[in-house]
Image (tube, rainbow, N blue to C red; front, top):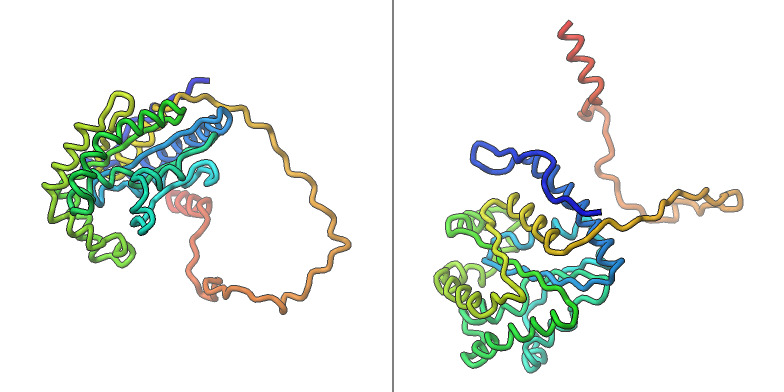
Length: 298
């Protein structure tokens, strides 16, 4: 069966031009159902899919990756986000530490940043030599073509965010304790070197935006639209069909006549801090609300 990608209803927007939350959540659910279908196809056909996510700091890469994988099997679809290379890794062939994380048959791997660190942060911050940088620009397209010839499908995304929107998100991270961990000294330095990063990205595209493996730019100023657009594009990039799923039914439970549970007093329980207390506020069931409204109208 051919898979349809268009929404069942036209988009709805807020007064500020952003997608309405209800529409976004409904559309995200639909796309995640398609991702589950894609996952079954990948397993069924033994495909090897590699998704590379790069972009500006605070461009929303992590949010998109989270929405892609949150309803999928982590044994099939996994995320790779490598830290700073160790002393040993620094002596290896540059691509070596990434090779170990490439997908096997029936897997989709998402790289939250990748070997393109060399063309971005390492270039701008001086973490690599000029010779290492130039060698990367020559070797990277060859390396990716080699992976493609081996049967790995590579899909590359660059998440683009405007100067103004990046500043707004950085300010939010400064004031929100839940997001504070996202803001590192390196992020602040990248903010100072906005133009340098722009030049590095432009030169990276010149050398690595190859016909065999194009860069796909995601406009990420609106997070909701960016997530839906990226997932929709991912689904279009991998031709797939519905895989028949065997019908399942719950078996009868084993009889417990011969089982005696140990005393619960011997077990340690997590304190139930949120048990309803006398006088706690409760929300009326929806039907009761509707009945109340009807009675008032009469």
